Length: 637
Image (cartoon, rainbow, N blue to C red):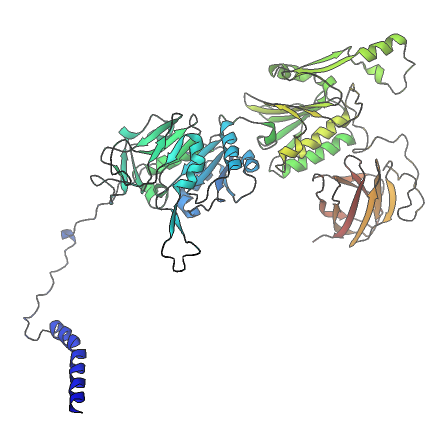
């Protein structure tokens, strides 16, 4: 028992001994009185050195355009990191759009430049090809790496996560950069002789800058944690560090490249992102350099236009001009309304004009036989028309005397050719689309042999607007800025002049027909007044959905008489390239809706029905093909 008590006392003493020692050390009872601290003297404290601030004031030139920012490859940065660059672009009238995935080739159609920052996943081969084609057409590309932007990947079989794999940004970025003779090295640069507060903060001076507009007026920069770059034979070193700057992978100094350009200045690669971030963009000439990068991205000079970019290359407002000065009727209204609505969806105004305004971009529509005013413009693009013998107005009158044998032979031997770099091609059945950029204007010329062929070609271009160029031009012969496309008109006649007097998309009726007696839905019957051959299907009520099947060459008419009310109308059909028109009680055409392509819904929102009269909704397929459809009328929100 005594031994147990003794062991317990020893254990307690050992337990409290460290605490007692620390107490006695802190409260030294025999220590002398401490000397009070010296009085505070601000002048005796030396200021901590800070880098020079930039005195640069940005005075940008106002431009317009779009820049695409890659966010589809696990990019390791935040929008706050590039807020200053985004602000410099906004000051130039350029909007930055995100690319979150999808078809990159389509997304690149509308823009001036593509920005890729610290991706952690590689670009696919089809994406690399899309960027290559974009740069080849004059688009700009900015590639930004950074050795501090990486991620760790853990093996699923490594339960404790003891062996993570480092995924650095430079390897995925090289999947794209290597296409343009640039490679980001797996290193970081440092300078222990002269730096901006830290050995990784590299100071760069004018003697290391190439003669390039991107560094004009730039005397001194600071990069914070940067890769070095390798530059191939088509590239150019833009910024090179001094001989006191070393690479972490080789521990060797000298001629290390931090920024490079390639593809005749269309591609810019930078090894660091931090110099763009706050507060580092205020250091030395960093702000000026970032502003000049914004100029590089905003500049559209040299961007080679292609037809597949229609209508994004137009500057608003755009003049719509019909060649030959025809008298415009409902057929033309159909085209004009559809085009104007399509242009509005991409924030561009299309204005009908008798002749182009000075400096305005122009969309020309017309027939080959009336394209004389475009002769010089066509010749500049190596295009001429051969119409022999000339088409005379009297030969197209509705009532013709019987042709003589000589006239029959002439008609059979008549030559109607489009002569271009693509060879001689028959006008009949062929539509021409030409893109011309000269002086201060961008012009698109659409010509066809007939009114129907012209309408089909206009619809083809409208189908380009939702970025489905492959679909819209897939059956065209394309070379540079010229496309020759099927007009989709069988046995097409080369018409003397543009006749647009018929109802939209429907041949004009010889005489108006009287109002028919009401019939049971779907039984067919006489023509409705002013609606030509539309077959009555009966009434459609508010909140109702009706269905039907269109036969070849057929259109259906549904009546609505529950006004006054504001309605939404939706026409759907999986195989339908739908069009619907709304006529008033007096047969007057009130609106035409044709915004989608085959299989897409046609939607009209907020249409006002001012009274309880009988309004008619005519439904048809754009090409008058066989198709099932559904039509819905609901109360507008």
